Length: 308
Ligand code: OAD
Image (cartoon, rainbow, N blue to C red):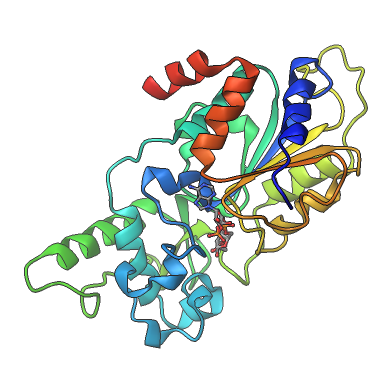
């Protein structure tokens, strides 16, 4: 997939002339990298730097085991060690790319954001909850892997903070022995945040939106509907994802072939770029969003949101 500027110009023109009115966004870890949250598969990502994230790689068969439910049931330590490095920080600020999504919403163009990210930064940027589908869940609720009862997410957060404090203590460097595992007050089982691990089902909200937005959208013509809800999606923006993980990876193929697709990513992914309506912009996501905003005449509004 080559970067063909004329196709991006077509995409921008579509927004400006009103032929693109209902945009779906499919997002991944690349969206949050400039906020200081590493992605998974890049050279600086979690899977290639396990030791840096407090994980003893020899405990895993493959890096993905870190987020694999079967592995977690046997040994939750690597996940909680990595979590202390990843999630113990104070509130992270959304990136300019997150604010670009907010701007799409304010322009009445954003039908839905399907995000694989669990950091909640789309919401923090002001995209309303009703527009965001967290396909791989979030760190806002937890469940006991023993008895299956809902558990207080505070148990998870406290364990993560305690682990981070121990790791930071003099002589506490390294994960072994430092990891605090949260346990269920009812049965003593290990508690896990409700983020989707390999081997687990995605949340019902993902399948609902797949049905309502992608597979069986209601036809246009409902006078009571929000204009960007009235009728099928007419464009998809894929940003910051390697499209390596099913079933989210199949979303770009589910739309009719005449739906325009725009890839904003560091590298080419999937088969986006292969259809006549596709556009591809390779490079840093925040720069690509700033460039798009400029072409759309939205620069000062985007900058205003970023300064907010
Ligand atoms: P990946 O790490 O697989 O892919 C991130 C993509 O973003 C890569 O294609 C990068 O090139 C790109 N990228 C990184 N930084 C960027 C930047 N500044 N500008 C533009 N592009 C950038 O992350 P995901 O695709 O989100 O699931 O991974 C999907 C799932 O795999 C995750 O949700 C997680 C993981 O295992 C589970 O754990 C179940």
